[in-house]
Image 1 (cartoon, rainbow, N blue to C red):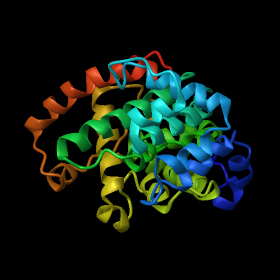
Image 2: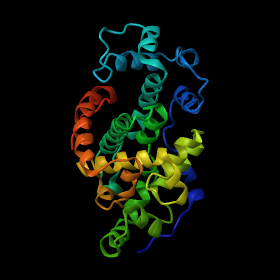
Image 3: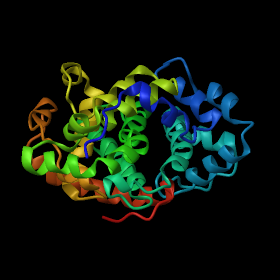
Image 4: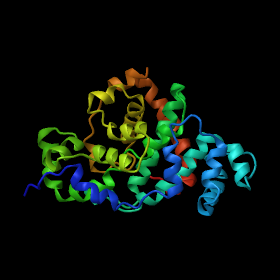
Length: 289
C-alpha cells in the first residue's frame, strides 16, 4: 500500500528527537565560516568541557596526525594542531554519538553509516589535497554529515521500501529520486533541514542539501561538488554502501570540472587507503568494506 507523502513540516518532530550535538560542538560549527576565529577563540569555547578536552588529547596522539612527540596538554595540542585540525577533532567528537544505530530502511547495519560518512570525509580530504584546494573544516564537516538526513528518513524508507525499490528497478530511478517520488522528500533535503535547525553555516547546509546535484544551484557550488565526488568514489570502492549506493546517479562532468581524468581515479583511490587506515583510531571505528 502506498504511503501518504510527507514534507519538511511533517518530519520536524523527528529532527528534534535526534540526539543533538554537544553544546560546545554546536558553538564551534557556527564559527566555521568566520575567518576571524582563531586558536584563542576556540580555546575559550572548549576549555571548560573535560570530555572534549580528553578527546582532543586522545585524537592528537593518534596516527591520523602522526606528531613526532606525545601531546600532554590542551595548549600543546592546540599549538600542534592549528585551527582547522582542531575544528575537525571537535566536530568528529560530536558526530560520533549520532551514528550508532542501524538504518534498516537503507540496509545498513549498526556503525555502517558512520563508516561510510568517515570514508567520504577522508576521501574529500584526499581529493582536496590532490587539487590543491584548502583541506578545511568546512569540507570535512559537510562530507562527514552529508547523509545525516538518513537518520531521520530511515523509518519512512523502511515503510515504503517495496515502492521505492520498484521505481529503482523498473523505472531506472536513483534511490533519492525514488524517495522523493514515494515519500515526498529525500534524505539530502532532510539533511539540509537538520543543518538549518542546528544553525550550521549556510555553506555546510547547502552542501548537504545539494550533495546529489539535483538542483541548478548545486552545479555552481564547489563544496557540494567535492562532497558528491568524494561520495561517488567511496561508493565505487564499495565502502558500506547500503541499498541506495547501488542506485546512484553518476555525473561524469564533475570530474572534468575539477580537471580530473579517469587515470587519476586509480591514484586517488591508492592515496585513500593509507589515509583511511590512519583514520580508524581517530574516528573510533573498525573500518571494513
